[in-house]
Image 1 (spheres, rainbow, N blue to C red):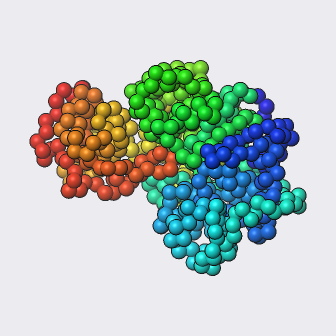
Image 2: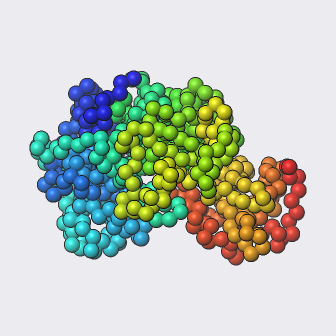
Length: 539
């Protein structure tokens, strides 16, 4: 499998390489009928780069994009890179203080906004921030506040000028992607070109992409999984890709059939939502051979593979260090098994989270990572030096994730360390409790956290937030009757609260810190107060 020399580890270089190799071959198609070829991607982004130059965007400037999955999103990103500037994708669900934090942190020279997202953007006070231009996509651009407004479509007609293409190297920072912010304000990860390139290279290798493959992208492009593991790996491999606006469990399989896609990525709750769709006799009649999905449970993973006639591939990664651990499509599926370390690029250890001493195989500790190759790792958190120093301790990046290595050198992900609940002398995985509750036929979603109470003796009590299919149909007693025979006594939740929805980040992660902070309420059912007696429990 071809690996370009390090001098070409930049997205503009790969775009140019594939334009020369593949020319007018179709590359990317979109849900709204738009498309571009490999040559077209190079040509259109060069023209847009000249449009950015006319707006005053230059090397080192930040350019944000609050844009849905679309052709425009990808053209903007590559054009920004061709100007030597830094691309900052923004979660399209953000509003209010969450949105302002990311804009204020990066202070972009220009920001691109979908017309339908303007109400959320316009409601944010950006006075005092050094934003010169707002570019509106798909609508009018009346001036608001102190910033200049232009229509995106007006930039597309700019004649491409070779002098506007700024030479960049694999060492240059090209992107800032914000972390999910589950435990505090979102942090902007400074990503060099080599960092982004490794995402694509490792994905291309691990999924064994060939000329026969076609990529299906339904996750948001502002997330590294869709943008770098999927789009960039398809670009690097020179294979077609199809992008839909958003994931839909009901149309997922039909969309994949229509696109003829062989490889997709479905993470977080996505595969479970697909699996919970009513089975059809033709579910296995599809072109897919592989889905990269994490986390995977034994309760649905093997059945998912059999039902849809594909393999599930796992891995382990974070925005800060991409994906240093990948599974092997030839290995049998095992829940939690991320795979083996890409040892030509990374070192990974399991250490005691208090002492940083390395642990033995099968001992659960914190996953720490460091690179072997320069610049394939983040360059820090933008304008958050104290957070950068906090993460890098004893020359290792501390993930905050719990896991262990088996004797064969395979990494098993267990949970976020802060999700490991300490109760009755036992360390308990919130993920494992959630798997049992989610398997109840009347449950659609759940989240489990440990909370402090006055009578817990300094340890945690377990609280479950549950979304039922039919409000009022499932009672707390019935839910615990389901839990007792399926989990250890110490893992059965004390508190249950039925909710209509559970807030998640764009990457599918539950915002658990908000649940912990909220604690119990008048709506919370307490089994001890109710006098519920645990029965049929396993030891």
